[in-house]
Image 1 (cartoon, rainbow, N blue to C red):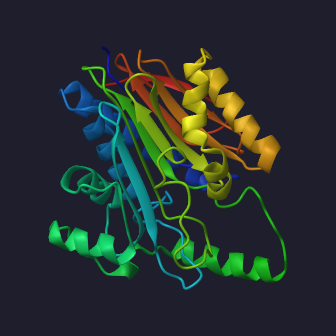
Image 2: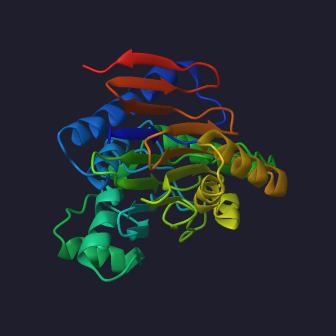
Length: 308
């Protein structure tokens, strides 16, 4: 089986020109890192965890360092990971003061009998596992402070914008043994209520992985994604015989027509096909397969280069 990894950096309304190159470099780095893991014989789970951790460490993305701020100006993060081999999964929500929530989600999957830990329980488990706690302000960027102020000002002026708050990061992979996995991580939505949980840590919505079908990681308006179980819905269409492109289009268009919810997703099949689709204005993504790297941000701007 030829290994494949695909990553996304979140649905977006519009990415300013000065940020585009940094965002592009971020998803390319994450895909390259995930692919290197696979080429070295690592598992799909290793690859998606590694790729997402790269994006969590990059302040350009809404996950880890760079997460948006809640109504109190604090960072609360959600993440989940799933192994398609046995459907084992780990998720965390409302996590604070941790650099890489995706690593904590994997520990939940592998070191507990549970699937999902939240808030104080997740924090206690992280401490028990030896994950270092960092000061909350270390995760806060100046850009996100300004975005919160702007959001509060616009909310007071009642300016709804369904294109906002679509940021997440994610990865899907197929390894040389034919196992698939997904990982998704986010800081949530700007100005969210304390304790708000979106789709990203919810298996079936923020992602899904099953060796008999494939793996998906989603991004977009979390409440809409939750209501339609976007990840599992996409794989249902694949099970029904649709191509990956058709399955992605069907599920994303259903969410848009039923709920006006915008978003995007990446998907890899059990045979190694892959797709990246979105209804938001743009979605940074990158895919590595057969020694080639494909990447883009906007529709019709895909570039392909040889991997070193």
